[in-house]
Structure formats: C-alpha cells, structure tokens
Amino acid sequence: RKEVEQDPGPFNVPEGATVAFNCTYSNSASQSFFWYRQDCRKEPKLLMSVYSSGNEDGRFTAQLNRASQYISLLIRDSKLSDSATYLCVVNVGAGGGNKLTFGTGTQLKVEL
Amino acid sequence: DGGITQSPKYLFRKEGQNVTLSCEQNLNHDAMYWYRQDPGQGLRLIYYSQIVNDFQKGDIAEGYSVSREKKESFPLTVTSAQKNPTAFYLCASSNWRLAGIGELFFGEGSRLTVL
Image (cartoon, rainbow over all chains, first blue to last red; front, side, top):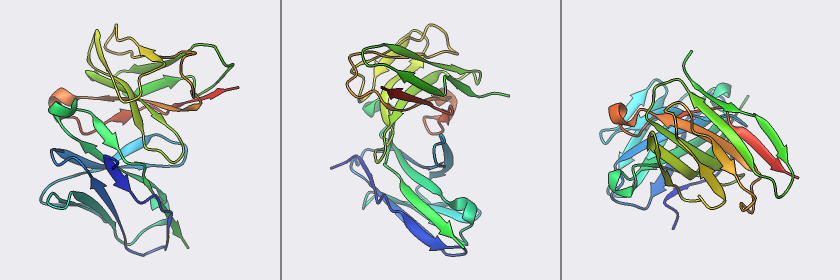
C-alpha cells in the first residue's frame, strides 16, 4: 500500500461548482498534513496546512480524519484559476526522519 | 527578494556523463531537500540536509550525490550510475527549527533530459 494515496483524476468541473478531494495515508503515526498546489510544469506551493479541528481559508476547507486516516480538501465556487494539480503531503515526524511524503496529486480542470 | 534559485532550468546530457544541478537559497533556512518528479508519480525524496555539513539519503539516493558545505547551497550531482536520470528535479528548503517541517519553499526546478 502506498504511504499517501490520491485519485489522480482529472476532475473536470464547471466554473462555480464545489469539488472535494480525498487523500488516504497508511502510517497512523503521521503527525502533520498539508495540501500543496502545483501548476503545470511549475514547482509546488503550499496551499494550506490541515489541522485536527479542520480549517478554512476563503473558498478552501481542509479536514483531517485520524480514525480513518484520510484528509480532504473542499473547494467551493471553483474558478478557472483553480485548475491545477493538488498534492496531499504527510509528515510522519521525527521518528520517520522528519520528512514529507507526497501523494501523486489530483488534477483539477475547471471549465466554462 | 528571498527565494530559491535552481540552475540550469533545462539541461541535456549524453548517457554516461555526470551532471551537477545547482540550488542556492537566501532564506536563511537550515534544511534543504532534493526531490525528483516523474509523470504519474509523486515527488520522491533523493537527499536532504537539516544542517550544514550533514545530509541524509532519501528514498531514491542511488546514483546521486550531494554536498552541504554552505548553508545557502545544496548542489546535486546526477552520476552515470543513475539508470533513469531523465526527470524534473526540484530543490526545496524549510525553516524546520522554527516552523516545523510543513512549508517547503521550492525552486522552479531543473528539467534534465538524457539523450
């Protein structure tokens, strides 16, 4: 089983739609979680951290479910500019080398 | 402006040649990382360094070497021993002592093609 798994997509949605991605992780000792965004042929950039209590940043909401070992990203009122690949990222913590493990990414295409 | 600079952006090399990718940061970050990205695969960690003069192998270190003689610099050498070197290489840094390892700041990447 992969350490971090995502549905690769692509998810094709109309502008204004609400879309949700899930990501599962295998190591129950994982300590911190993030969503990064990567535009085509560009470097990834941090979109948001994922906290146990859930967190929201404008149209974006991230949630963590430790019992089921998944994190989610919800995008409301999607814009054309949201088209990108969204990477789920997990840090196992010091015991695991304190390094980040990246999922393969979910591709989102927002269309007119 | 602070940031991470990778060079060259595009590089072509013949099979059997070593090549060194440059990565420089002026963010005063302690930790630096090298990742490789292939189509359909997530970023895979090659090497990382959490402090000057120290570095550790990541998940796919074979065929690569690094050095960390200065805080600002973390060059990656792709040796002829690397069987499939054609890829997109990303360098990153983080201020892990202050912020924990969460936010990685990436360079724009180097695309290596082996002919």
